[in-house]
Length: 92
Image (tube, rainbow, N blue to C red; front, side, top):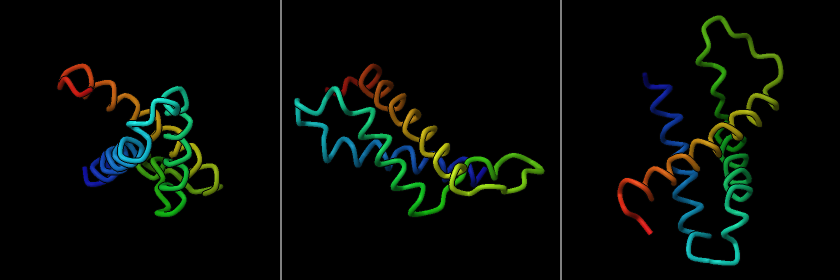
């Protein structure tokens, strides 16, 4: 349960960084998914976050790709979180 909470914290952190840095700049709106991915890559490599360690019996073979794929998942989940907040909480 703690591992899922840690992943959720990284998703929220990624979304918060994107919103605070680029959220109000209209020129960057089309590039927000790519900026979200770049931020997620930085976060996952800086803190060495891997979703794949949650899999039972998983052996680490290539940490670089684990962190990179985790960044893709975190970036996409932060996009879903943004859509959820905008739709149901009336943000923006």
